[in-house]
Length: 90
Image 1: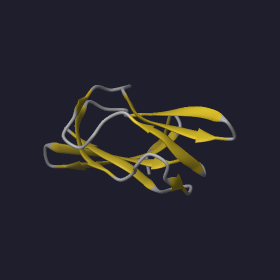
Image 2: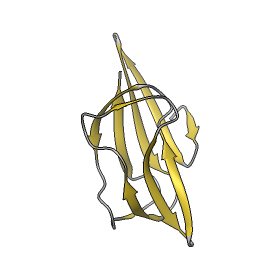
Image 3: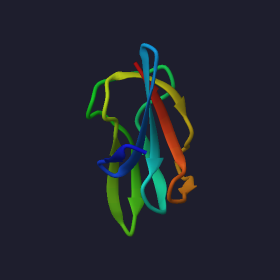
Image 4: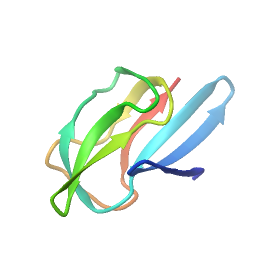
């Protein structure tokens, strides 16, 4: 784990020319809205999903530009701290 993104835990792996960002839930929360799907092109700072916790809306952002390789959540799902939300690769 290299650090925490805004409202999402972020792991980044450099593998040859491909950099991969794994975005994890930082806290127990519900998935309120999924804004992107696998295959979507995203820019650094784009919101991927909006979580809800204690009646607060929490945007989960990507820290790098690339393509959403995997989405691991659906609207209404309850996440635990550390659950994988998405994988973004350039």
